[in-house]
Image (cartoon, one colour):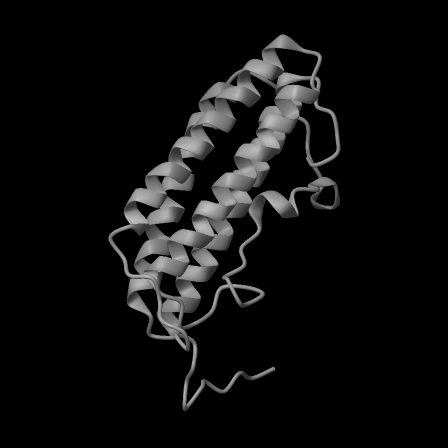
Length: 172
């Protein structure tokens, strides 16, 4: 969605549903990976995040009832910045990530989504799209703030948190 103007409610809803669905899939994948790597704390948080994204998806589905949404092909998604899933110091979720990292990753995703929806709100010429995009931006910002409060209950990881004397063997 980055860099493209959205001037219809159905396109905004279709793109939002696709983005939320992709986040559900990513959180599910990360949870599976954390379970395999015996990192139950991160796995549990990713399952919780997946559940939250599923709830948000249902809300957007309800907003879409009775509408014919366009199909958005994967090559037209253009929202990698909005669903960036990098852990500080790593290019993706790390098998030793802590709850602090998991929540930071989710906070970054929510901030990026809020920024994206603000861009859409400001770039659209359609009042209905502006209102809906603004609502989605506020929701993402509020969830980011909630995640920040939740993260405060977890210690900041010490330097070397990702050092492993016996790292797992990754088969290609």
